Image (cartoon, rainbow, N blue to C red; front, side, top):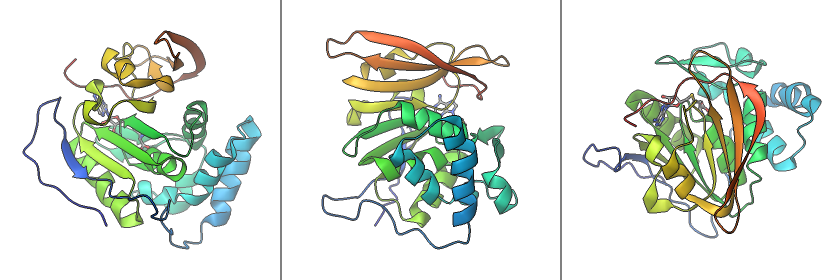
Length: 246
Ligand code: SAH
């Protein structure tokens, strides 16, 4: 069961909890998603858009075969949700192209016991993909209506290992830190130092960095056990901007 907590609205450091993970050790790891008639469409999406572009992580492919992407883009015709493109989700924001979701998820090098932080919940699709693979997901969204919509959707689908927070993700979420992996799905002008601080040594972060309106660099950061951070560029991408108070 998921709880809706009503907490006083909040500063950047104290985001409001819209959905709280309730999963206990021993609970089923994933929800039994409804049979929806889109399994073949998802299979084709995985084959033609993900595997065809040389992404092969079995856990990521399995997650993308399971999560009903059309439920996260409710304003478009369901089959179109599976096309090789991003889609608008309202408030000037987008749900990323399936391939980009797969690429970012694979590069996080996730393990089943991991706790992952996402900045930029949007529709909640990326959070659901992560929740299929890891033990716990904490996701932050700055636009209240999107945060609320994603929390409702993820709860309705039966996810019990996702916490949805409304707030400025630039500052991460210190109460649940450190995170084994961090994924930022909006483009920042720089890598937020609070997020680097909240990444566990040995962990990976994927984040688009660059100027708005231009192509950005999708960066992979790896924090070594001594805390040293190395960075490499994975791809050129185009994301909506990371907003907020910083
Ligand atoms: N991961 C999403 C796509 C997100 S689009 C999905 O799967 O649908 C990027 C999102 O980042 C938008 O919803 C935007 O409102 C949010 N965002 C932008 N700046 C933010 C910030 N500082 N903190 C949290 N969320 C932010």
